[in-house]
Amino acid sequence: MRKIISEHIKNYINPTEKDLQVFTSHLNEISVDKKKFLLRPGTFVKYEYFVIKGCLKAYYLDDKGNRHIIQFAVENWWIGDFDAFYNNVPSRLHIEAIENSQLLSINYDCLKKIYEEAPIFERYFRILVTNAFISQRKRILSSLEKNAQQRYIEFCNTYPNIEDRVPNYDIANYLGVSAESLSRVRRNLKS
Image (cartoon, rainbow, N blue to C red; front, side, top):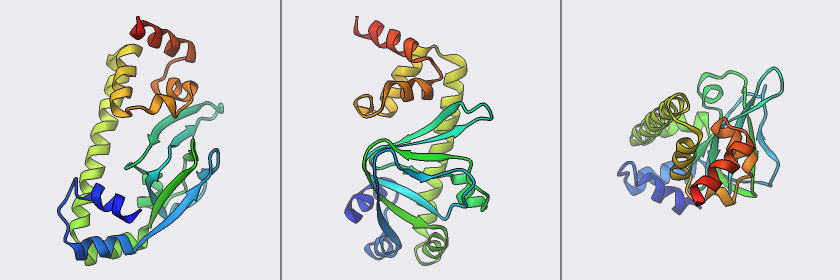
């Protein structure tokens, strides 16, 4: 598992072997079974998670009980409630496993130690946060400017091969369309 995250990290920064050892020594391996929760609202968040194997979704429930999926996380993606993690506030998100999943977790206090012992990881996480911010902005603009078919094509490019792993109603929810609209989009693209 540690080899997988080490290879992922090298896509963003060039750490020394010592830096990688410092980082990976603070990671813990965990498993989450399908349909089990990694996180629920109201809890204080002490960990962020890197997906080694599996698929998870992060979502918010509004006051009316409507689910709003904000992220899917598959292999080589990080997932967590970043606001709660960095600002020490209660979580507002549910994170649920769509598949049996193997993850690596990192504790907030350990992350601060890593920044001191291997400062290059501040750069790594800055790059990830910047990329996440840009992706979120693109998603917001896409929902304002593009039709359901265009948003679906973007989704497929962002999450290749995820269609076979995630229920259609979750994809529709993420895209902000009905399941029926998603089915029409898929039919149109096939013809």
